[in-house]
Length: 168
Image (cartoon, rainbow, N blue to C red):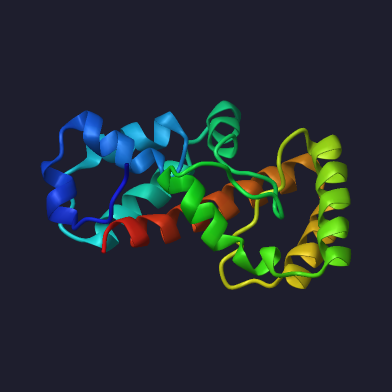
C-alpha cells in the first residue's frame, strides 16, 4: 500500500517499490518508469518538473493506460488501494451533490464516453459538481485533437496533486 513519504525516502526505494508508489499517482507505466529512472530528486519541485516533461511524451496508449486508473466522475472507486482512496477524496464534492446533478453527470459521462471512447477526466479537486458538469458540456464540443490535449492536461494536474500528496 502506498504511504506518504519524503523525497529522500522515495529516492532510496528499490525500483520496484518506487514504481509501485508512483502508479498510485498515475497508472501509466511509461510515466512511472520515466520518474523512477529520473531519480534521485533533490526536491518536490524537481520531481514535479520531471513528471510534467514526461506528459509531453505520452502516447495514446499511455494515456489510455493512465485513464484505466480513473473512475467516471460521480462513480466511486472501489477498494482500499491508495489510488481508489485518493479518487474518492478528490470526488467528494460529487458524492454530496443532489440526485439531479448525479443523474446529469451519469448521462453526460456516457455521452462523452460514446463520443471519445474514454472516460471523462477532470481534476475534481477544487471544483464543485456544477463546474465539472459545465466542463463536461463544453468538452463534448471539442474535436478529437483538442480533447486529447485537454485529457493530457487534466491527467497532468491530477498527477501533480497526487505527487504532492505522496511526497509530504
